[in-house]
Image (cartoon, rainbow, N blue to C red; front, side, top):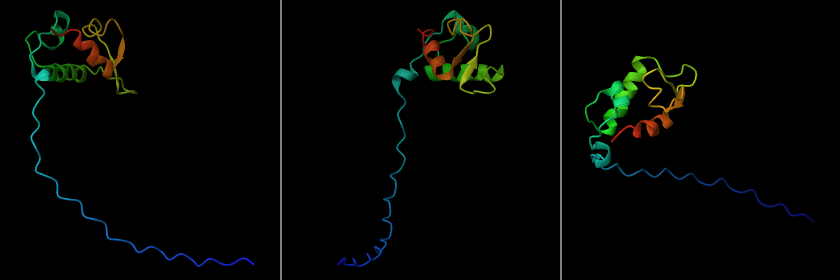
Length: 110
């Protein structure tokens, strides 16, 4: 004969443990490699200026140039359309992804 197993009782819900309070935000130290002034090539200097600046500032200026000239692709925002000034920097490509852009731009920094 088959014996019926007793129904399991619903486990009593334990109150959720409180997470410990977060420590005070520790101010991050900027990476020295990113803050080192780099001199742009003549081609890159035509877009962002010829003075030496950190990589972070180079990226900001390139994005400002892209936004100002409407070079971001309308359908796929990750793609950047090159104009006459950016095409030589992008290795002659008409369109590059924003991730490839940083790699191509770094070749023009000394």
